[in-house]
Amino acid sequence: MTKVSIVIPVYNVEAYLPACLDSVLSQTLTDIEVICVDDASPDRCPQILDVYAGRDSRVKVIHLARNSQQGFARNRGMEAASGKYLYLLDSDDMITDDAMEKLYVRAEQEQADCIFFDSRVIYESEDLARSNSNYPAVRYGTYPNHPVSGKELFSLFIEQEEWTCYIQRQFWNMSFLRRNRVWFPEGHEHEDEVMPFAGLLLAERALYIPDQYFIRRYRDQSVMTRPVSGRDFYGYFRCFREMTAWVHDHGIQCPAADINIARMHERTVRLYGQLKDREDLESCFTPGEEQELYRLFVQACKAEAYYQQLPGWLLDKLRGYQYVYVYGAGVLGRTFARRLMQHDLCLEGFLVSSRGNNPEYLLGRPVSVFAETEIPDHAVAVIAAARGYYDEIAAKLEERGIPYIYYRKIDSQEKS
Image (tube, rainbow, N blue to C red; front, side, top):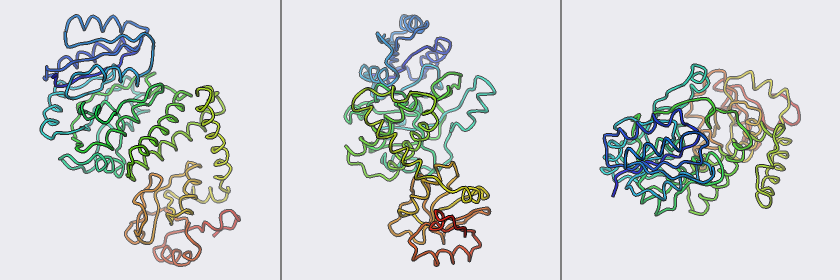
């Protein structure tokens, strides 16, 4: 059995493809196969692939008859793979010479279902470097140096705000993927939001190592740098549905998974708001059930937009503070938090009087016990709890000198 199968979907990257293939074929681990899936590329990529295949028997080329997007291409490559382990690389990126050897050895030592690792970045221009300076090339959180369950590792990523779906920074056991039927969704973009999410939640032995084996190239007009469009909205819409279905169908109980799904929904709603007036988004959906789901989504967004309106006096007041907290993590707290987030105001987190049955995270924000939390200067709290607790909470906030606003007075235009 081949040790590692490297699957590379290829489309319209003739200027970058040779560097990608050279980085793969120069690996210190030689027992590899390189499966390149030509996604009906309109440039010289098919010819370049055939030349490399003629030079090196480890290169196998699959030419697709029509362009079918990355999910389809990756799945065809995975089906053809004969390696014990799988690595997925994009055709405009590269890896370090020792990447496959180091990952293979560690995976064998730990009997890992998957390994997550880090990257370094190449920017094609200073403008790209500035506009993408927030790319999380490495993680700075605290992680165990031994395998843990996938749920535990995913929860650590979410809790430390370091979850990334980048498939190029992952190394998978092929039999684990096949046994659990973990594949990429097909027919839309951003499919790599779903596959690692699904796989990691089922993994029994998952590992993160802080090594930079992946070399990410930021260039103009890639999926991540081009302007957003209806196909992005459609892709995230589908991802939300598929992630929700995966968790439901597999009976997965994991608060971190719920947080990630909620963030995907927020992203979808935000893109809808950006694009609805300049694109015919309904045309992205197949007539029938898909379009009906989209119409229901639109109706919900309209109702939500109406409900989420906050009075101008409150927005002006909140914008005078650097940090906003919601005191209360029940129905009222969640309701106000959603209203707040619709206005692009930064919600720092939720405060509660005791841990009790309160979750650690809500809507992707931490839920903290007030007495144990250091509140920064220039912060304000919105009290959103049952009225019977208002005076008690207000007294706690006043004792620590933290300004507050009563949620019950917001819609009546009263100011505290």
